Image (tube, rainbow over all chains, first blue to last red; front, side, top):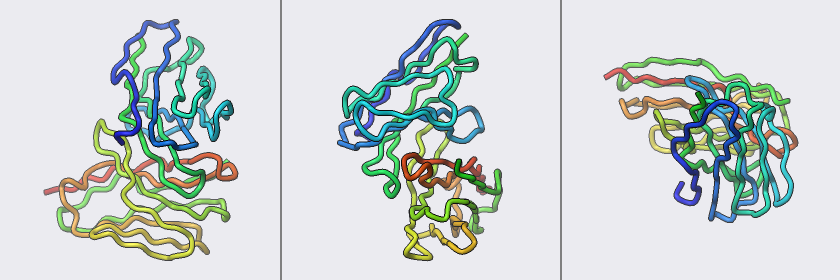
Length: 113
Length: 112
């Protein structure tokens, strides 16, 4: 979706370094999500946020952190505590929870060596 | 958490044949059931959705059916074409409608 910007598209880091993935939206959606996708795998929820200054852990939050200081922004930090950080990360927004579709950004492919 | 089952995990069909993918859920309070398509290396995109007040919805070659009693909903693609080859995910709200859970995905291959 043109209203969701994830940057960068490709990111390379050395093991032991923290890295922050950016997600910005101009859709004025309240809810924002971070999913992780591994090759040939489904989408696993890392963190989600329904309103500014509030967020909840998803199914695989260990080794990740987020913030929601502005409605438009929901950055994800992959910390050195995440044991297998190499993956495709997708940010999504939702106009209202429960009964509306998710809109996805183009994703960031993170490679940690 | 929400129990989500999607099958098959892979599906190969001849061009022109139909494809059916099924998802089973456990939360009887769910009332919104979307399907997403993800082409290789791209983001998932909504292709069709249905709400619990209807049993079927069609959009050209794509349809979704919902059986609330049995707690499953299915994606039907008719007259499949090579460009239908992708991974398809079902999804629905969980955690008191605070989050969205996805099925494991079905990799559809349409053979020309």
